[in-house]
Each structure stands twice: as C-alpha cells, then as structure tokens.
Length: 271
Image (cartoon, rainbow, N blue to C red; front, side, top):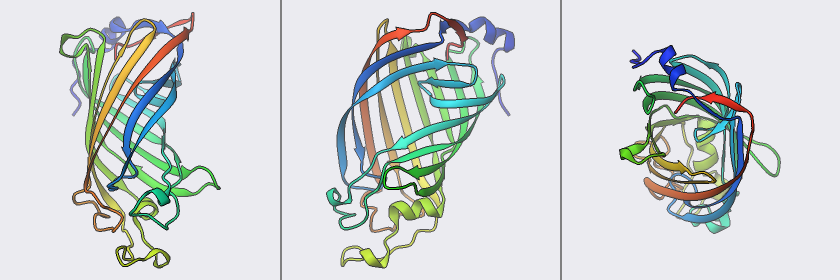
C-alpha cells in the first residue's frame, strides 16, 4: 500500500515556476566495464548536451528522457529512452575473435508508484518498474531482447542540509530475456577456444544493481556525478566463459554550462 504524506493541494502549493526548457553543453568523464561481467573497463571523456524540458507530455530532466502518458498524485506511467556504448571485441580478451558488441538504443514503458514523500516533497521513495527492449545501431538494426529492472528509488533534495544538492539512490534486481543474454554471453561453436567453451544462456535473473547520483544546479552551471555497483552472483548467465568478474563498479562526473532558457515559465514540483 502506498503511503503519501501531503495531498494534492499541498503538491500544488509546493510547485515552483521554472523555465519550460533549458539548454547547455558539458563535458563528462566516466569509467565503464565493457559489459556487465567483463573484467576490462574503459575510460571515456565525452561532450554531452544539457537539456531540460518540462512539457506536459515530453520531459527531459535528471530522471532521463521520457514521454509521460499518465501522472496522478501517486502513479506515473511513461515511456523512457536510453542507450549503451559499443565494444570492440578485438580490445577485449574474453571476446577476442567474436563479433563486436554494437551500441544500442533502448525504449520501453515504465511505471512509478510513490510509496512515501514528505509534505514539502524534499524527500520521496518510489517503486519504479521499467521494461525496455534494445535495438543495435550501425550495420543494420538487430533486436537484442528485453530487460526489466524493478527498483526502489530514493530522491533527496538539499541533502544533508546542503542547499541545492540533490541525491538519488536506486537499487534492485535485473531480469533479462534469453535473447538479450544470448547477445552478450552466448558462445557458439564458431567461437569456441580452449579457454572459451561453448555456452548457451537461458534468460531470467541477471543480478542486481545499486546506483547513487549527486548533482547541483548553479545559476549558469550544472555539476553532477554518479557511482554504480553491480553484482552477477546468482545470474542465469553466471557460468558463461564471457563472465570474467561477478561484480563491477563504475563512476562518472560531469560539468555543463547552461547558455539559454525559455522565457515561458511552467509549474514544476520541487522533485
């Protein structure tokens, strides 16, 4: 059962007037494993767009890019979008001689159920249940199956008394289709080596993940960072020869300059 502190009128009272859109550009540095289960990681330094859009239907903010179809005082239904980085198998010892992992585009529905929030909305706990399907990019489109990562998501504004600093923490299990497992972890007879036996995955439980992100918006600048920990213990593909490490850690930081914003203002809740 959802427990909500406050009410619809309280929510309206806490709404702020913010620009419909904000635009900027930034630079980020991050370290990522080649894929979940890889024992090799890469460091990336990449430019990124800073885009905030607070439309009635389409939104882009610190929760990601999404299209909202339903939002009530307790439940939100939306379509969310994401992406993953490509991996050259020639640069990864475990996958040497196998096809490259192409970058992918992810899209799918997500339901968010509010379990708790304070009256001023400075803190909230949600249950989020996203389901997405992936399609590879470059060299033709290939479906790589679905993934679901139900998780508890805690958002804190002005964390530890530091004004403007926002902290988000999310944790939960991951489940994947056999097709997605196969894309990342199967080894067919064509790619068998003495140190890489054939393997066929089954799909199902794919481990768990904890992510924490901290950010702050200044007048013309945004700064943020994240840390993510993964475990593959008990995953359905844990015995794949391509799984060289059953835990992983990744992190990143970014700074963006905000060079413009809309003159039109819209209501936006503090969270």
